[in-house]
Image (cartoon, rainbow over the protein chains, first blue to last red):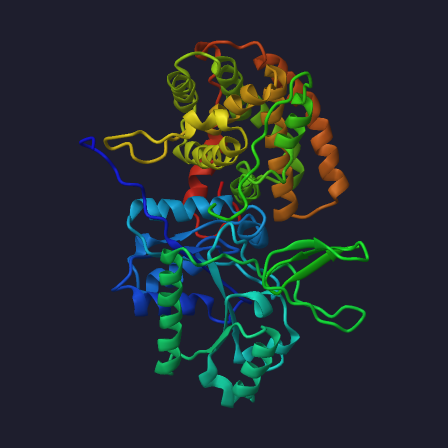
Length: 260
Length: 245
């Protein structure tokens, strides 16, 4: 081995955090840093619409060394930066992995401004989609690619439910129905068991990633939908195939796009 | 990019010259190199007093200063790409561009774009890999820094662009970056924006003519735009920005 041999930089588990503005994406990241920051080496990338607002919030939260939190500008294209041209986010992730090697998990926060932004599997290995009870109990039922296809749906701020007239149990049931059984976590900072579940999910996912059994999945650009014959298609694989009627279908995990 | 889909490798086919086609591919704003995060200095310019109707003047200034220097460096890098010690040759061109670019903010912006461009191009055209190789030992375990001019020049050589196509690519990219950013920052009639881009064609072609025959680093012009450099520096310190640079 040469005298100055440098081992290859460890590739981190990359977790995306998407969801509408104000639902608690930054708070979720702060919570994860607080819960896991002592046992894991973490990094955070924010994708703000306006530069480093979220990065500054996280730095001021004091849950992670400020230099491990970096902002990526998106040129007013927050979707592009996490979906069709992920180059700037990838460079930022790799810089963190290089500068703080070894890094176990990098959390990438979207600069989401609506219900439709999800991460490309070329950028993250798994992703959260964050809703909150204050957004209304019917949001989960309305669905969308993040709600139906993200690896974990967070129903956040459950402690506020009594004040906003939302039935958390029903909201979680609606979300689970839209998600074909994928994980839903009803979360509150004041509810330790919910935090323990979140924490365990990250540790389990990291273990799967290290074992090589984690397969990044695209939630898809659209939610699953019913065909004219009333049959709802949800495909777990990423298969592309041609149906007998000559329509070409591209299947993401739960997502479903077709061109006739 | 450990996704299961591996990038197909572009192999040149004997007997067909696809350089004109590839130059369109490289010029397309949809090329995934992070161009959407850049305003070519327009965002700080507008926030420090440049008026929207002055954008054509702003383009003209860039095309005869910073952009001409970048295009000239790309042309020289393209010409030197086939030399034997190509990494050393590219380093010489890179240094020549760097000492002509006083603003650290502009150098950083170019380095970042060079990295993303190379990341893409070295996957599509594997012959570019020597540029992306990390130093094997010592403190240089980080990926090497290359300004965008060198990366584009090397890519241009690899895909068969001539010197004029190479310089035009740099000029076009600059014009479209400024105009696309203007549309994001202060939306106006898109037809006016396209008419500005069309009119800039004359200045782009004049710039192409000035740099197309350059062969040595000594010939790379050193014209600068101190106001643009100053704005670029201010931009790195602002807390609210849409664009990286």
